[in-house]
Length: 95
Ligand SMILES: [Ca+2]
Ligand SMILES: [Ca+2]
Image 1 (cartoon, rainbow, N blue to C red):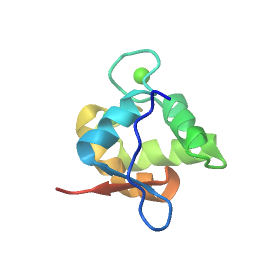
Image 2: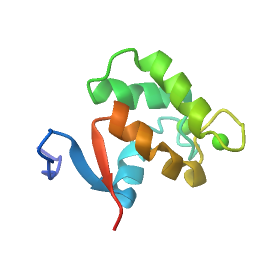
Image 3: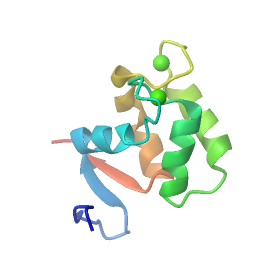
C-alpha cells in the first residue's frame, strides 16, 4: 500500500493538519488547474464515504467560495475546514 498510515481520532475521523488536508484535497484536482471544482469536491466526498455527494459539494462550494468564481481556490481551502469535519470525515488540526 502506497498510502501512508494516518492517525485516527476516537470517532474514526482522519486527523490532518491544514497542510495535509490541502495536499489531500489537491489529489482530487483532476484537471490540474489548481482549483477544486464542484465535481472534484464531490469525488472527495464520495471517497470519504459521504452520501449525496453532488448536493453536498454544491452547498460546500457555495459556502466557501469567497470570490464567487464557483471554484475553491487555494485561499479558500481554509474556509472548508468545518465542511471537511462534517462531510469529509476529516478532523483538521490547527498547529
Ligand atoms: Ca480542478
Ligand atoms: Ca473561489
